[in-house]
Every structure is written in structure tokens, then in C-alpha cells.
Image (cartoon, rainbow, N blue to C red; front, side, top):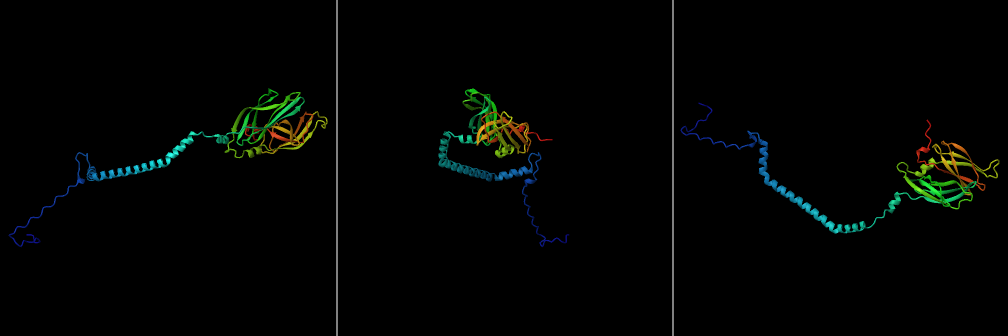
Length: 317
């Protein structure tokens, strides 16, 4: 007999039976598919979708309605803006496109202006010879002018010659030693061919200063002795000192020496130098056979294309 078990006070009464336990709620998490085709996680996702599919459907419908409303509102706003402002702008644009556009200002800005012939003169050049000289200016600060020219003298064409004119400067174009005992009556300069080379502003910012640095020549101690006063000479004697004040040396520079009498150009003489080192001074002695020539000063016209690297002497090793 169990001493800890309470005895029934009524030994003749049968004890009441215990209530039956409630059945456990089935759990799909412990479900194991014997075929392996459907895992418990896939089954749980499927059950969740089945339980919430109505809510998902309603959310999708509300989202599409909201997007449609926004798109319709934006479309109506754009159409309204076009009807108010766009129609008049389209009419104005149609009128502007139907008109021809004037590209002349842009063309003048980016293209080169034509050369300017400042003067053409005829000078005695010696015994039964004459010289014709024209001063031609290049008004373009960013274009190097190159080409060929010739003269028509009394209806006859001279042989074409090449020329160049530096940007923003002037040059003498000449035909020297024309044989004509009576003297030419007229001379007309003709530019036969023309070519422009643009000077990049990225490489050279100031073309004028760049050219002046390289063409820094000085003509000093000018002296002119006429034929009548030159002892033992059968020509006018012209002497001066030519100084290369630039830091550059030139292989074979060529010059025109303009002779002036009271600031009036009265003659031109060619001058060729074999080589010209920096800071070098050369004594120049020229002869002129024009009996009536008188000169009080002279001006140097360098015919050196400083944009051509071949005109420079290579540095000494």
C-alpha cells in the first residue's frame, strides 16, 4: 500500500476518470516529403501565399492605379503646357528656320582677310634697267600668307616668283633689274596663287612679339656717297653696319635694303648674307649705278620666314 496516496474517503465509490488530452495542432514545419520534391520551406511559402493572395492582389491593383494616375496627370500637364506655350514657339521656330542664316560674320572671324597692296613704285635700277617694287600688307594676325606673284609690265608678264608675308606685317614684292632702255610705263602686281597657314594660339600666343624677337636687326652707321663724290668708284657707295640683336642665328638670311630720301622710298637693293650669328655685326658695302640717286637713310626689310625651321643655324655642339 502506498502511504503517500490519499485514500478515498468513500471506499465504495469509484474514482472519476481523467479528461482526455486535446489533440495537437498539426505542424507543417515537421513535414518531410518522402519523394523530396516539396520541402517544408516551399510548403510554408505556399501556405503563406494562399493565405495572403487577396491582400497581394489588392496592393498590386492599388499600385497600378496610382502609377496610372501619376502618368495621366503628367501627360495632361505637358499637353496643357504645349497648348499654351509650345504652339506659339513652334510657329516662331518655323519662321526662323525658313529664313536664310547669315554666316558672313562667322566666316570673317575664322577666315583670313585678303592681302592689301599698299603701293607700287618704279625706280631706276641701273644702266638701262628699272625696278618695280610693291609693298603688300597681311592684315591677319593669325595667318601666314604664302603664294606666287608676277608683274605685268607694259603688257608683258614676268616670271612668277614665290613669296610669303608674316602675320600682321608687310613685305616688299619686287622685280629687280628689268631691262628697258626707255623705262617702263606701267607695272601691275598680280597675286597668282594664294595659300594661308593658320598659326595656332596654343603654340604662339602673341605672334607680333614672337616675330619681333626673331627679326631684331639693327642698321647703324649708314653712309651714302654719290657717284660724283666717290673717288675711284664708278657707282654710288652705300655702307652701314648690320647687327643681329636677336638670340637666333640664321643660315642664309636675305634682305631688301630700302633707300629713303627725306622719308620717301627712292630705291631698293637686295642683300644676301651667308650666315648670321646671334649678336654678330657685319660691315656692309653696296654699290648702286643709278646716277641720279640720292639717299639720306635706309631701312631693312628682312625676307626671313621665321616659321620655317630651316632658316635657323643648328646650335653649336
